[in-house]
Length: 195
Image (cartoon, rainbow, N blue to C red):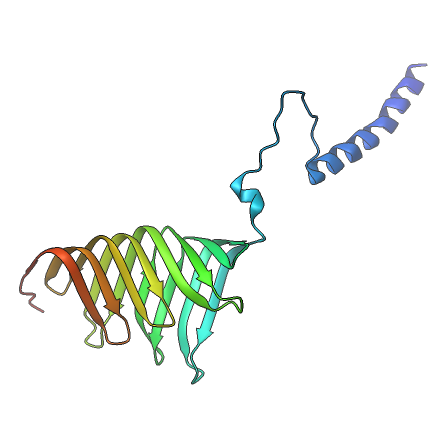
């Protein structure tokens, strides 16, 4: 009699396992009377990717810039949120600007072209000049507009490199002309660097 009881139990185990797998995959869970179904912000995105890297070419077929991120979430309205985005902008085959942050948001055209990249948290810009003297700019937030090759912020900015230490409240930059304009409350110092 005990043997029959155990065989019945063994036959029940696969059915329980299948039911458990189906409910786990579909997200079905027991409903309690006082439970309220609230959608998290994570549930409303249209697409998700990890380890993405996009390469954008100019009209001459040369690499204009790359954009990579550890994660991306695509939302309705051509908005994409990025985790740990890194944008590398090129002139010819040489990297000129390396821009990174903890998070970012892309606003794009319906065709997918990036109009604006808004970066937040630990924004860092590294400019590599032809003389191989690097300039580093840090801020809490920054907007990059790839079509116009400009970037700007109204946040506090710190610039260091090649004997320069400077802070400013806000800045605008023309990446194609390698120019940065500081907006207000500008403070800084220059010291001689011996090579």
